[in-house]
Image (cartoon, rainbow, N blue to C red):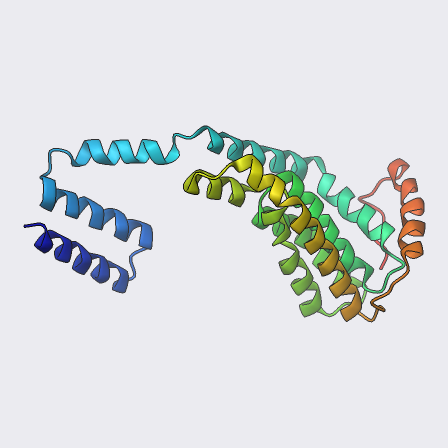
Amino acid sequence: METIPVLVALALLLFLLLSGVPVAFSLASTGIVGLVLISGGDIVGSVIAGTTYTAVGKSNLVVVPMFILMGMLTLNSGIAEQLFAVAAKVLKKLPGGLAVATIFASAGFGAVSGSSLASVGTIGKLAISEMVRHGYNRSFAAASVAVSGSLAVLIPPSIILVLYGAVTGESVGNLLLAGIIPGVLSALMLGASRSTEHGASPHSSMAAICAGARSSLSLRDRPLRSKKLPR
């Protein structure tokens, strides 16, 4: 009778979860015990091997290490620092320009690495110290970096969307395409929010951004690491 093994497995699962065992290990242990009780120990090895291979043996997951590789190349090549410096130069005329630059630099880095943690860790290391040095409140600076990390989940390439597509069977290409417009709109809205909270008018002139963009062209012939970032 299969009712008793099911009850035993559920009781074991609750016990492991209440004991503080991680959910993944709790589910795996419960599944193994349930298989042994229902079908015997002979098929446990083959079922575990087959299930593990089926879960990870998908061609869509090949892109995940490639995204990580792109993020590492970007980090070690200094592109992240240059990206933040250009964004700060372009947006310097806006109130809260460094906070807005943090948002857009994180969006740009997220579009390369596909990882929120990598984006926050890389851009945050640069942005928080610069914002504090220019008189920004530390909590405001930290919040700007933290909220900008969510953009890497939406803007392709996104590791989360690839994993979601592999688990649910959805088209990874369609998921990545669907994240472009929400990601760009989120970046624009977050940038406007940071600027408004720092004292800007909601109707900030685009002429200021265009002027900053023209002046930022001079950065290409200057060493960016030794240049002080504008507020």
